Length: 265
Image (cartoon, rainbow, N blue to C red; front, top):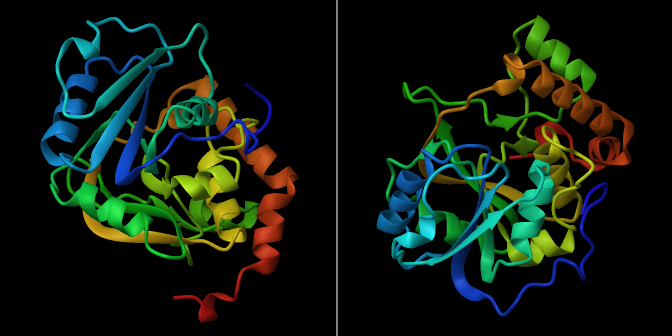
């Protein structure tokens, strides 16, 4: 399905696994990363990670991951043709059976073994629409994964003048968890975004629906390849995502309705 968000009927889930996570991982040729990633989920997510859905957006080059026994349900999907970031996760959500849906990039490592129970518990707190950890670079520096709403003037402040963001209006979808009820209610990702800015749009819609963003007291290490800085095709996708964000009503409605910065925590 392309060109739109999934509607609520298309996002129907089965009876959920209470207080546990369905983790969606999309691999764009990240086969070499996946065994270690699943191994960490098995070691640290025992009793919390109920299901892992791996979508191979490109044909897998390695052996099937299901050849090994895992302490969670493993679902592997091989796309006939590459799909966008949001489309792949929306399709994975159709197979998710836990009451928390976790979006996870394959280029992450988890030095903090408390991450998974904290993430699941935070996502199920009243009023929370998206829970996420602090992301670190491999050298230990904190990443800029918590960001101000992406407006043209915010980009100028950041890129031209080097000023820091003044608020947290969205967080990177490299790793976050949403209650399945919230993900379903807002229609998942807007699939008109192929790659880039779909996480901005999702976080703004979650907040417009009355839910909050919640950072948990845990950390994860993210490789953060920043492909849009190095690959022309990714740069074009980034520009297309920005243009869609700026020409659709979600961003401007959010800016109009959000409380003043002085009134926010």
